[in-house]
Image (cartoon, rainbow, N blue to C red; front, side, top):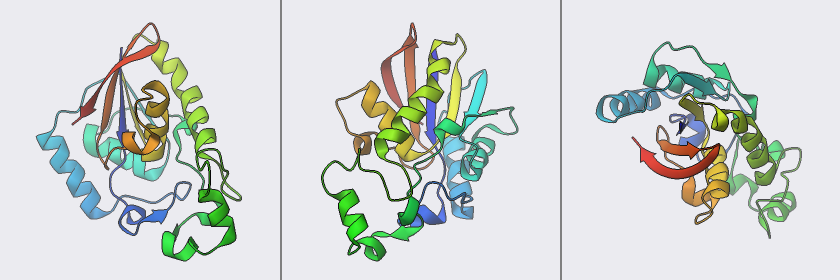
Length: 188
């Protein structure tokens, strides 16, 4: 079974380098144009099943790469909720005590005030993906960089969340045997 995880296309939050996850931003026109170029030049795997996080940017990416296919929303694939830090930049946050407490020490386990931790997001996403791993049909999931990075760091621990986070419109195809991820390749 092949499971493909693709990061959504470019948003204003990406361009402005904001901490955003729970905000339902759309893709930028240049994000849609970049996805069209990737679709034409790259080879995105086909599948019998399609999933998204349900966020607008993920749904738009699925449509841009695969057209009007039927899909299922898996809310467990949503990006981290940054709580009080949502839609703010590092320069806006860097001197705040709550932000310093969050980034100091184990920032995977530290919970954003009013939001989630990286660990919480990863376990939520792993639970959402578990039934897909044991299915006999290939699947494509359009989700978010932090989700992909966290999940892959668990499955392939030779890298951290940040090592596995793909660029917008890119991702990985994971080969699963008996419900376990055994191999990975970047796409497109």
